[in-house]
Length: 276
Image (cartoon, rainbow, N blue to C red):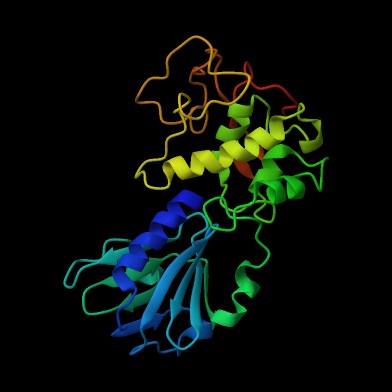
């Protein structure tokens, strides 16, 4: 499930494969841009902005893509078999003499002027993994709608960019509140600590091939570390995907419900607040 850390890693792989190289092939398999030909242009850089990918190309052009739930970019060497999915799922091909980048199942793919990137990403809040990260601004945006459930507010990329459903569930657990608790009802001081913890969690995972949130010795959040058990190494996440399994803090069975059509996990023993 692509979130800010995953998208940053994807941008790094694409940048390493494409940046500074002249495109020998370009194939955008979406009707609006099917006739666009980027062959002969140099890729300048590939940058992540929240969950968005911006591939900047010589001539003032940017290829904007978004992975959402199922999209992916794969990089292949010359002659290597493409294994990202069947051919009809390919939405973009960018190749140079050394690498071929193939975009599969991309729900968003558009070619725009680099000077107009704000049309695609200008609505985003501060990027948790970007140079524009501003915890104060993120906090202000979250507090703009104090009646909104915390889980929904964390997923709104206009508040802070990069959090997906996994981090939403894990952050609410670490804050010991349910995702249905209104933002304005959080105990004093919890929301600023949650914003800080979100940035630390994503940074801790930005270079990891597998996302881990059970690193409380490094990412401790008040009112203290989990009581009781030591987190087992094989447990990567506290609640996400652990329905009916025992909570790593208190042993209560993890529960699952929908929130805004997203599977949402929480511990009824550790997390306080309204539930479905």
